[in-house]
Structure formats: structure tokens, C-alpha cells
Image (cartoon, rainbow, N blue to C red; front, side):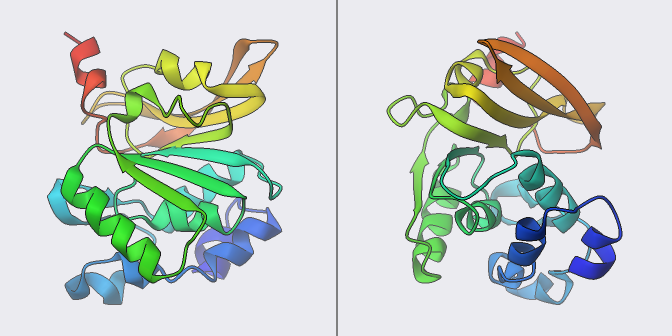
Length: 206
């Protein structure tokens, strides 16, 4: 997976490559699909959600430019795989999942696998986690129709937010937002296809 899907493309951060080779992705996959765990495409998980393809996980993680001591917020825990990758690269990971059954399952799995520096809670990730803000990095694993203001507000100065922006079933762009002198600097990375952010994000579209 690392050599053919990541190194062969544009994943160059040695720490990210190392961690992608160590986190047991198959543990986060449903038993009937585990033989496909290391293939380069997304897979379904419970509650109609997905686990992103390894390349996208690595690309989003690399975009945060983590050095090892940062505090990172993840919106959309899902299976817990992205949080596990982040936990190997930084000091503290706070992960929010709006779906309660997924929250319980991911939290139990991450504890079983020994990830002690991840805190998971059930809630609407649109609003971030103000009690733990500010964050050095924020990673959003579901598509929002626009960049949620609360997430940008909870970024530290110089922090980085990586998020898919666009509509469900339509055009989405993986977008990197850096906070420079309190203002957003936006960089468009690549077209993507993610499940939509629910909760407040859907209300904002009405």
C-alpha cells in the first residue's frame, strides 16, 4: 500500500508514510471486507458511512504538516482510522462524531488498540470543540457546503484546516485553509467525493 499507492504519488512526508505502514487498517474494516482493507478505494462501514481510501487519508494528514506536539481536531470519527493515524503523529487528537453508534464503536476500538491520546465524543462537528480550542490543525472527513465559521475560529494563528467543500453527489474540492493574521488563506488541493456533513451544515443550506 505504502509503496504503490502513496510513495508512487505525491505523499512525501516520511512520518506520514511510516505511520500509514504501521496503523492496522484492517482493524477498522467490517470483517467481510477485510481482504480489501489495503486497496486504494473507500469502503463502506456501518450507518451508511465510509472509510476513506488510504491515499486520501495520507494526503489530508500530510497537508496538516504535523511535527509531533500539536493538538488536532477531527470532525467525523467514522471508523476511527483517521484518528488512529493522527494519534501516531501528534500529541493529542480530539475527534467528534455525530452518529452515536459510530461514536461508541470507534471509541471502544481505539481504546482496545491502545490509542490513549485520542478523545472521542458524540456531537455536531460543525461547531467544533470549543472547550479544547484552539487547535493547531483541524481535519474534516465529511463534505461541507462551505467552510464552517466555528472551525476556522478555533484554529490557532498559523494553524491549518483541511476539508472537502461541496455538495453531496456533486463537485467537491479538498480545500486547505491556513490562518494567517487572522484571515483565511485558501488552497484548492484536488477533486474528491465524501459523504456529506449532516447536522448544522444541512440546516445552513435551507
